[in-house]
Image (cartoon, rainbow, N blue to C red; front, top):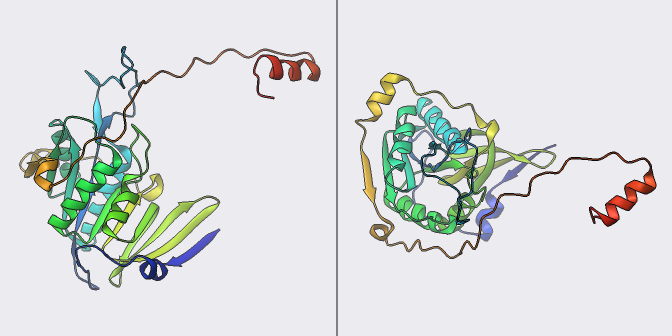
Amino acid sequence: MHRAVSSAWWRSIWPHHGSGHSNAAGTAMKILVPVKRVVDYNVQVRVRADGTGVETAGVKMSMNPFDEIAVEEAVRLKEKGVATEIVVVSVGPAQAQDTLRTGMAMGADRGILVQVEETVEPLGVAKILRALVQQEQPGLVVMGKQAIDDDMNATGQMLAALLGWPQGTFASAVAVENGGITVTREIDGGAQTVQLSLPAVVTADLRLNEPRYASLPNIMKAKKKPIQTMTPADLGVDASPRLTVLRVAEPPPRQGGVKVGSVDELVSKLKTEAKVI
């Protein structure tokens, strides 16, 4: 199934509350790409002994894979002449500078680190990004659809709502043309195409592209690219968490299966042991 939907109806019920930035046809723009530092996807995640969260001490960290896809898409748009500048942004500890350097080695021009040591929830991140959007005036925000550490899948949608911008989530294809952007997005049972006016927020799905490996020369060049460091307070944002984690626990280990001799025995075990019927 493939559906096409215009953003005109969206504009009629939610007028633009953004910065007033517009992108006329043929005019290059700035792209803002938020990236998150997470436990590397190859690492076996372990819960801390005290049950307060996931163990990160001495654990390999890397850029969230969906954010890598977002950076790659921004770089491709720049290579096509659609964008003139790519700014990668991270909200996290000082070590997140390494994540920004990775993005700049892939092709981003500069980085912004909003340094905060404690966990920032999606709404807090969205508020920080809104402040940065108002400061940087990008024509497009491209970000991963979710982070693999918490799987929230909320920040992009919250940012679009706070800005009053159109959004194209779960993007599997993106085309910027005629002063707007066409996003093909993954939906249950097929794909949907939405046509959005700019500025807009797009969140990247796995099938959008395959991120490039940063070459050694680009890694060396990235070390000289600028990173601006600030705090949520500098942006006038209160990023205090609204939720309290009571306990984090490993899922119970799976038990071995058993063979049953009859349907009656199966039903009996489902009732008395598994308690699912």
